[in-house]
Figure (cartoon, rainbow, N blue to C red):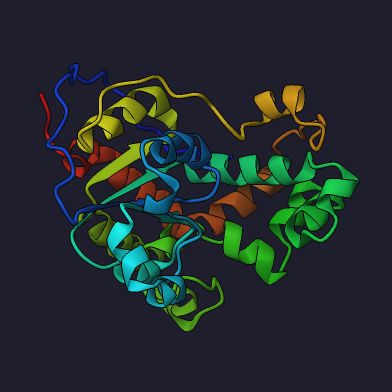
Length: 273
């Protein structure tokens, strides 16, 4: 498997929170699938009342919100496309987490594959994963699979990226897609990394004016296998040269983007402490 090799130097401790949210300011959690986002959202949502939370955010949903509901909202979250984030009104602190691209694809495949047959019913992605070897899954052309694994990071940060088969995604060179996504990422308030999750989770809370607290992992397979009857253990396949080749093809832009983001990690968050 192609991996991004990055020296993960330890950072100095950060202890002092940033300024609390100002009146009218909102948190936007841009949730990229299989990056630890469910764990983040469980805590972020606990900080607000139900009337202040908007989930599964899309531009259409934001537009349809009644004026009173829009004024009350303090946190928006969801697997949002580029224009969905832009549709959220007012001043906002946009947060997100990233993950090494090949690891993210493997996590998705085994997450879907570990669903029981009954739980996977009516879910096309998991059904495809359950009947496919890893190599077959990587080569699958169904849109539900393509949109999750074909440069599935950068597509959240570029115009026209919602569909992996869009003209922009198909005709733009990987290095240009990566740069466009990185330029967009630099406008965010805080960017965390799943590979540094515990540390970055606490830093994220500080960046929105909250005190440190430990993260409780949710939706990871280790905890699901022991606590959720809808998931079962599955054997992992060895990574073959053919799988590595497919991974490299599917993450050509993602790997460049991830490397750029990780190397700029300290620039992609407010300076605290």
